[in-house]
Length: 252
Image 1: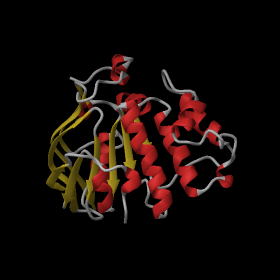
Image 2 (image 1 turned 90 degrees about the vertical axis):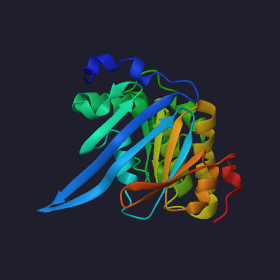
Image 3 (image 1 turned 60 degrees about the horizontal axis):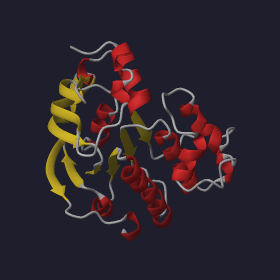
Image 4 (image 1 turned 180 degrees about the vertical axis):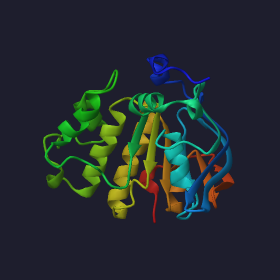
């Protein structure tokens, strides 16, 4: 039975200890219909994610990476299977439950920054801190991504990498248990992309946030604890890195 929305507060948003299971997925599948033709985006995916992990999802376009990420983040629901978040059945949750889950437990970072042009970096981050429990101060979140001296600049006054770091600060200001990143360096050059990855790496290390990163870039697998390779909606291979490579050492 799924919890009532009121039951999600405050325990659902409470951070766990490193190594604790955060997600357990069993037999997840997603089927879209285009007219009479079913399109299988995800099929029979079973896995665990743990607090403090940094996981990279690798695979070509159409392999199911974004579908899996969207289901983990409560942006979509599976067609079948189950998804458990710290003891709560998200597949049985109504929209109010999923909205609370997204608001208080998950931070999202996308390829495009989605900043409001008329607001400063500080004000863009404050949009999140105004609607969530126990947030960081916007200044603290921006300091974590090394933008303490750019807080009062507008997006048009920031580089692409700086804008993406504002987006990361906005995502982590709610102190989420989970940070989901969909191609966070896809619109950036190598040097700028590494700076962004260093910010993500720092969040994962210092806050103990389960961090899941989608990428086409195989080089980024070296910075992960675990790499999941997807193809045709399935996890076809898993790799565990005995030692994570620092983002600053990556080359592509």
